[in-house]
Length: 106
Length: 339
Image (cartoon, each protein chain N blue to C red):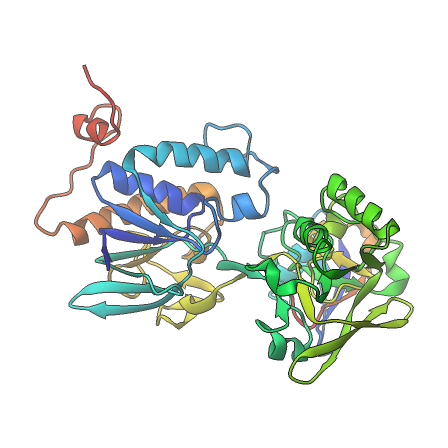
C-alpha cells in the first residue's frame, strides 16, 4: 500500500491509498480523480495517462521500459519528468509519491 | 442516399463482428470509420501486441484478430466507408438519416454505434496561435506535396510519418526536422537516410527541442523552438507539419441527444438500445451496470443488438433463432455448399 498524491493542473490535490500491484493510473481512475483519461486502458498505447513525477521522486520510481518514450512523444507537453502512469506499478517503496497532472491529456 | 438495414459506426472488432451477426440473420449493413482501414484500436494502437482473452483463441495480435474478423464477414460483402466521420443524424419518417463529414448520406431504421472511445484524429499542436494557421500554414497530414516546393518546412515528430515526409520533402523543400528527444521511433532505415542527408547539408535536424511560439501575421514567418535548458532557436518557416500521432475523440456523438455517462452511452442490456429507438451502442462506447470493456463483451452486445435491428428492419417477419451449425439458411448466406 502506498499513499499517492495526485495534483490536478488547477492545483487541487488528492491523496489516496493505492494497493500494491495497481498502477498509478488505476489508482486515479478507480478513485475518480479527474485529469487522467487512460483511453487505451493501460496497454501503453495512447499517452492519455500522462503525469509529471515530482523531481525528487523521478529517479526512485521504476524506470521506463521500451516504448514508453515513444508514446510520451505523443503526450501533451512532455517534460523530462514525464511518465505514463499506467506503467508505474505501486509498491510500498512508492509511499508518498507525488504526481502532477498536465493541463490536458490530448 | 444509401439505404441499408443497419448503419454501423466504427470498424473495430465490435463493429466487424456485429456485421457478422447481422449477416447471419440476413440483414445488410454499411460500416463507416474515420480511419483508413478496419480494426479500430486493435489496428491503430496495438497491431503487434498480443491479446489473450478472445474465447478459444489463446493468443493473437490486434492485426490477426482484425484479419480474421474480416475473413469471417467476407461472405456478406459488407461495404466500408473509410476516412469518413459521421457528423449528423436526424430522424425522417421513423428512419434514421446519417450524414458524414464527406457529405455521404445513409438511411436506415437502425444505427449501431460501435465507436470505441471515439474517432481517431490527429493530435494537434498545443499553442493557441496554431489554430489560426491550421489548414493554411500548419498541417497534420499532407494531401499535395507540391504546395511545399521551394518552401521552408518545419516538421515535428519522431515517428514514421515525420521521418517519411522529412525525407520526401527534402527533395523539393528546405526541411527542418524537430523532435523532443534524440531517439526517433521511426524506421531505422529511413532515419539512416535522413542522417545522411543532414551530413550532406540537405536537411536540418534539431533534437531535444519542442515548439515554443509562432511568429507571423497572415502567414507564419518564424517559429521558435525551445529545449530543456530553455535555449530558444528561431527558425524561418513557411509551413509547419506536425505528426504527433492520433488521439481518440468522441466528437459529434455527444451531440446526438443520447443519454451519456462520462463519455459512454447508457444502454438497455436486453438489446443494447440507447434512449432513442433504433440507435444502439455496443463495445467500449456503451455502459450499463457491470459493463466490462472487453472485446468479448462487444461481441455479445452486437449479437443481442442485431436481433432488435431485425425486428425494426423486418417488422412483418418473425425472427427465428438458428445455429450456424445446423441452419441451411445461414449456411446459404455464408456461401457454404451443403450436401
